[in-house]
Length: 241
Length: 112
Image (cartoon, rainbow over all chains, first blue to last red; front, side):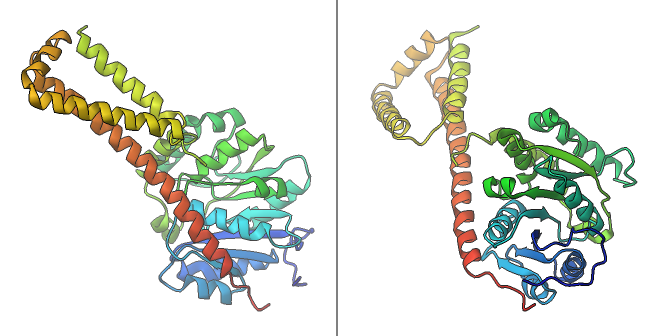
């Protein structure tokens, strides 16, 4: 097991039991930076290359990530599920985090979320960009739609969550072992919330900052995709699993 | 309200309930086959005696048999579309699981 001594973050957050899952599709331009930053704080990073055609897998491997490659493009939900299945099969894995590959998240937020999880009173910590003290400047239209999405989901309302489509999540073994995402595309975020509700996982939110760079904005999902997400949410549960 | 309206609306609702409940078990499959058989018999009869569809249509408050067939066609089309959509979703899920198994078998670990 490779535990590096260069510890840029205090505390035991870099302990070897943390696995960060990074789903990536055609992110060769930025994946190296993202993986290196994560590896400065966490020992294990697994990059799930979702059938990229630009060499994302090789770049991520060179940057020090474990790489699992989908033979075809399946979507972010499928990639997260694959990453979790890989990570939970590794010996000593106890804490799992999902982290978007486009550089919109901050590693320091994950470190704080891992510390929060280690207090032991919750099973999963979800990032929210809408906390009162959060300084994130979410574009107005995006903010309105994301808030509406959180409000439209009964599970999300019941759990008191404000940002159901945040890509930053940190969770323990209990969640990882039982996670079974079936929505391959972008609807997995809502499905994740439903699973939390159905399995009675203890959940809390933590304010995080989203870095809306030109790059991450260009890679982000179009807002119209929200229609698909709402529709898929209604059909969930009608599918055989 | 016309009888045809009651019939069409309850058909839509019944289809919805049927679709939203667990499908693809052996019983549901058998009923689909029975339904198909009835459909074929009715179709043959309608072809042989086209004017009778108008009689049935009149019972239901529709003027022409052709109109009745159009309504039935619309319902059948909606049903097919929805069940195909759900079927595709299911196939996608299996396909994702297959791809995942392949991906996990050929995972690469970093050197350090």
